Image 1 (cartoon, rainbow, N blue to C red):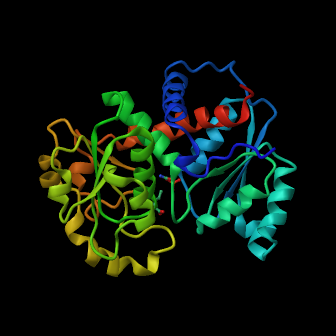
Image 2: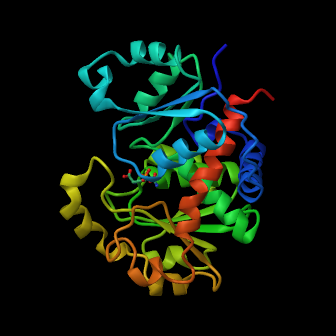
Image 3: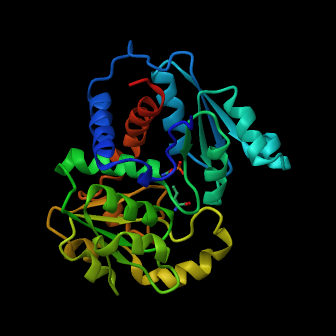
Length: 300
Ligand code: CP
Ligand code: NVA
């Protein structure tokens, strides 16, 4: 039997998503050091890109649960020297209980999962970042309750985070307003699949109108460093600043998956202002992923 993977938010149902959020909140608020459901279990973490939050949250989460996490950089494994993905998936999954993979092409994770005998978690691809959305949604629910029927505005690059916001809108049933310049729009097939839950706007101000949550991300993602200058020019009118926040609901929140570039996609005033919950959001990576590990690895 194929194990349960977490490669996209579309892999979980609405009730599973809400279950993970509630469990993450409970794990956060009632930490019990004696609760070690993953004692003796091993998570392999394969990173083909840099990470602060993802690495630390998975590693700390496994330790809290009594297990172990292995940090594997593709540079130092045979993966970086061209050992076929299929062979690597078979070998690594024969030795560990779960595998997290952060990579470039989304197909790398789907192929890896097809050949893995243990659950595979997408720790970010060029196309999606579903783990971040578990934390973002936990953070919204903690502050404001269920997000169903609310309006979220995505301002900026239509990147991997934007795609995962589209998926979250589909699963949790909220409206997503997107303002992204031509050439930087999200993938059409991903957006089309969301139907009228996703709406496009010409300006950040129009997208932000009446929003309950404003979200953005860097203008040049990992792997796009060489396009930095050109991207900054194309996206310069898409900064989340005080004017954009003022167009939203009075009590609107601001989120960013981090790392952030103050003065580019977000002004320092918003990033460090009272509506910003970016550091609670970052901390929740730990709690949300502990809930995810328990969901994937503990017999129900
Ligand atoms: N938000 C996020 O995934 O951060 P890292 O790149 O530091 O893991
Ligand atoms: N869009 C960013 C997210 C980083 C967590 C990137 O892919 O680099």
